[in-house]
Length: 98
Image (cartoon, rainbow, N blue to C red; front, side):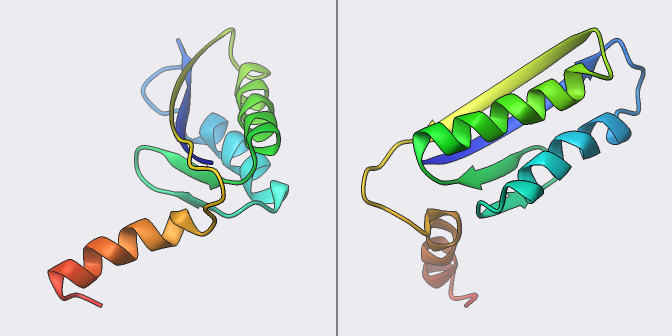
């Protein structure tokens, strides 16, 4: 599965990068394929391992904030691996930017 998620502390002011960095650290230490951009962190793997990483990342932010917002979008496609890169590469080929 491929998951895009965003975990945000609520009530922490305008800058939340320190708290978000804790979530990203959890994802990167998981060893699962991942990518972080300005809005989401993407992580790829099997259901249980991905959801465990999302849970632990959310808990890492919650440890520093009393309230947390979690947004999650998942692409469930059994038997597919490498979607984190292949989905983007497919679009880039069509654009002629590869």
